[in-house]
Image (tube, rainbow, N blue to C red; front, top):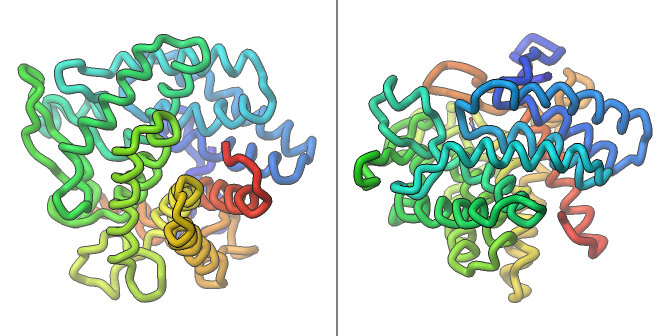
Length: 349
Ligand code: GLY
């Protein structure tokens, strides 16, 4: 599956289905099929979704099943109603749920980091996105426990991952004996106290989705606060640097993927606003980011195979800095599709 394109390259570097990003390329194809109705694209979407069945052939060792399988099989199910996709997704949700720790009230995101980093139970903000698979399953033949787990996870993260100023930690570390919160860490950001751009995007997107699935006003309020923080700190130029607190700004690398994730989340958030001013505020902020991403500076056009240039994957690791990354493309096409639906008065999901 396509994952990234580095400066000087034109074609996607590929990864296997066990990589956390494996679901995004089939997801892009599903959105492209949704927009075009093209039967060849449908065949490709099905062809690239199929190998992801292998994801459940190995023991579950991280929280990314939702990203991998809901972006691929989930979109496929939404667009085709394929009953086999439904059965597979129900199995996937049960696998994801095996990572839930009732003492803490969250899913364990990175089992490998328990020993490596001495993080006995760890949960990252990105993990919110995977809750969508649990919510879906609980409403489509799966156990009601999945719903309760997803709600509890989202609640626990509101107290552990959200700082008083509504910026986010990346990782919350918990004790496994009594479940208490030990510390917040910003593993993929500039420092533990900094505001990692994509993490803020996952929070905006994730709490908006949690509100859609629960109607719980606390999640809506959280999504608004996280969005307000993101918008208040957006730099000149309208697209975030990879971390809002990198001291090398304005020479730091940008993160188009953070903008795409946040824009897609804000578009959905706008649909939940009764107040016209707030609706326009979130919708217009998203449109502005999509317009900037559509300029020659960010849109690859025929320069290379991706839609978007200038994302940052894991800066502290020195990987995917100022690269094209597949999840930027996924959330970009999703956001554009959402905008089109909002403008034509149709349902987003
Ligand atoms: N979910 C991993 C990342 O956002 O880089």
